[in-house]
Length: 600
Ligand SMILES: Cc1cc2nc3c(=O)[nH]c(=O)nc-3n(C[C@H](O)[C@H](O)[C@H](O)COP(=O)(O)OP(=O)(O)OC[C@H]3O[C@@H](n4cnc5c(N)ncnc54)[C@H](O)[C@@H]3O)c2cc1C
Image 1 (tube, rainbow, N blue to C red):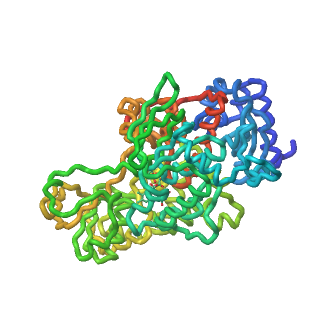
Image 2 (cartoon, protein in one colour):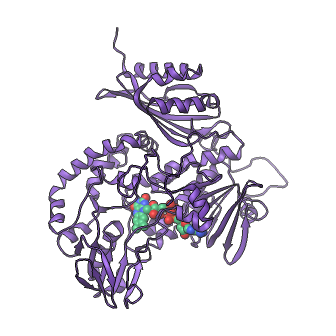
Image 3 (tube, rainbow, N blue to C red):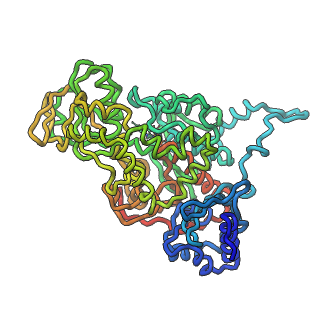
């Protein structure tokens, strides 16, 4: 028997797979997977964001969805060739369903599918007007009732939300709401984005003045309009604010600034939401069919309750309210917390000549920015990756192609290498008493982010200040109480303070549903974020995907959107397609609607 080349291996398995799917032979299709193989689907087969783990789950999905999905034309993507390394043959693939076209990635090991990613790219008949389909702009010829682009745009802005209801209302106009708004615009879904801040980008502008993005530019592009080649690697927060404002304008988004959502209620009979908003002092009721909460993972401050907070005579605020160091020169500041915000704030305070102490209650994962860029992100998101032909779309899909169940196995070696490379740095920190961790299973930053969205600092300099004792450190202690001019810690020590900053993180997005809709709906929907990994702050059972993000929830027509810039860019595509399909009345049978195991 002749050896197959990688293209033949993939083509053969795809042809066999398609034949089984087309004949409804689920058993034959499932047998092509390894017994513990994975199929991650982003909307194309499941109308959900779902990973099927093992043959049994794959069979259950196919038995439920195959008749309606009608997959066809599975093949290696045009202009791509399969590759083989370390016993794994892999390839970019394309396919169609009855209603959509899709892109995916396949990995084959020992002649069977190890991982399969299928994602919906576009709905047939509802392709975005871009490339060969881009709009003309000008209308050549002669017309007596001609109106200009500006007049049309003004008319839209005047009528939407008043004479005409949006199909979708996005509450929250940070980068999440804006990215989704841009995708819906391209899909022709009437949408309004509302934000209580005046201008797009204000959520970033309002943060402490020294903040720069911790993720590099290649990871941060918005949909459709990537940053130019001269954009800095780490965007200063006001610069990203300006970009978002410009983006909102040129992408022609219906963005209502200075508009607060005060309540929302689902009207079952009408099949629409009744959303009360205040727009520049005017009360309005909107009636969208779909409601997206893009109110931010970092929007609901967790403010601890310590004895004596009411007797403390100095200033105290949550990190989200921290203005930066200028007003505190020569003063004594205690920062409660030891994650990203705490480090950024402490570093800036030290630079301004402030006597600053960080209080660390539990361990923190620290990774040096350079090491993260070189070893963790570099292959997908870097100038080196771009030079090697990596595109943002391919990088996003490559990342998405590794099932969450095994992602930590890919991450552990990376963080072991980082630990080795920066051993001296970690040693210095530990000698100073700083409590370090690499995640419960040593899988590092991304897993911590996906599981709990907290517990780390990407070091851009503050750790050296801690290691050198310039930022003072009290670790392994908790706050017992605040006195008039000091903070008392559980080891009996007392820190004088003019300012206390609570860098104590943010609450779950579930809290937004409770605030804006009702506790009942928030409980019905359950916890937002996390994988159910049964690690610290991410209780089991295993869910396989991030809870409630970008996918149908237990509350009809309620969606959650957000995450970092990469996630907002990537997953807004799938959320927008789900919304568009519903608007067009395309059947969207959801497989495996997630169950609720935790409330908040
Ligand atoms: C200090 C800090 C540093 C960070 N660094 C990075 C980074 O480097 N890279 C990265 O990707 N992410 C970073 N993040 C995470 C960051 O929060 C998100 O990437 C980003 O802000 C999320 O965007 P979002 O649109 O989901 O939410 P947000 O930007 O929080 O936007 C939510 C919006 O909802 C609005 N809103 C809330 N309630 C209502 C209401 N009732 N009515 C109307 N509007 C409402 C708010 O005004 C806000 O503008 C950082 C976060 C913090 C706090």
